[in-house]
Image (cartoon, rainbow, N blue to C red; front, side, top):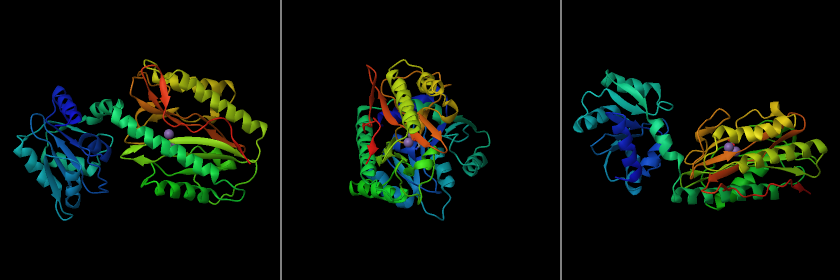
Length: 366
Ligand code: GLY
Ligand code: MN
Ligand code: MN
C-alpha cells in the first residue's frame, strides 16, 4: 500500500471508522495516482481498515486506473448499471455488513449519493474525511514541490506572453487567446481556472470577465492565470500599466506591492496564518484603501487551485515547512481600475520561496 493510503488508513483506525468513501477527483488522485474526471458519474475509492481498498469508476476508465498503477480491485460499471449495488457487495465481502461509522467528504458528497448510502445502511453516521485528508495534503513532499515549481514557471511564462501581446486596440479576449495558445504549444491541456485579462476600469472588479474591451493608453492591465501540470496547479496575478500611469494608479500599485512584501516577509515556520492576511491588510488600510481589499490574502494551492488552508485573518493555524499557498493582496477602484499581485509561496526551513517569479516592479508598457 502506498504511504499516503497507509497514513489515511491509520487515521480511519484512530477515528474508529468502518470505511471511507472518497469521491472527489482530487482526493482520489492524491491517494491513488489515478486522475479521473467522472462528470456526473460515480467515482469512489473505498478504504476499509485491515482490508484491501477498492476503486469504483466508469467502465471506460478502468484501463487508465491500471495505467496509473492501481493494484487492488477495480469495479468498472456501465451507464445502465447502479454502482451502489456493486459497492454494497464489495463492502460485504470485506466484512462490512452493518456499518455505523463512515468517512465521506462532507463538503463534496451530493445528497442523492448520501441517500443511496443511507438506504442500504440505515444506521450509518458520517465523519468528515476532509479532516484527515486536508492535514495529509497540507505538507507537500519533494516531488509535489518540483511539479508546483514547474507549474509556477509556466504561469510566469503565461504572464510574459500576455505582456508581449499588449498593443493599443487589442481586446482582452485576443490577449487571453494568445496566452493560452502559447501554453498549449508547451503541452498544457488545462488552465487551473478561467484566465483573466482585464483592461482599465474592468481591472477594478476582483473577478471580472474578459471580453471585447480594447486596450487604451493609460489602462492598468491585470492578468490572473495558472496552469494544471501533472495534476498540480499554479496561480499568478500581475498588473502592468499600458502607455502611461497617473499618480493614483501608481499609488495603488505601490501600496499593493508593499502589502505583499509585508506578508512575504513574515512567511516562515511558526507564523500564524491570520497574521499573513493582517500584515497586508494593515498596509492597505493605513493607506486609506481598506474597504477596497474585499477578500482574504490567499489560499492553499496544490492539486486544487484553491485548497486547504484558507488564508483568512481569523485562521489561528501556524505555517509549517512544506506548506504552499498564495499571497494576493489587491485594491479595486471602479473608476481607476484595480491592482492585484499574487505569488505562489512555499514555506522553507528558513522562511519562504516564491514559486512564481515574474518581476513585480511597476512595468509601463510602451
Ligand atoms: N483567480 C483566483 C484566485 O487568484 O484565487
Ligand atoms: Mn489568481
Ligand atoms: Mn489565487
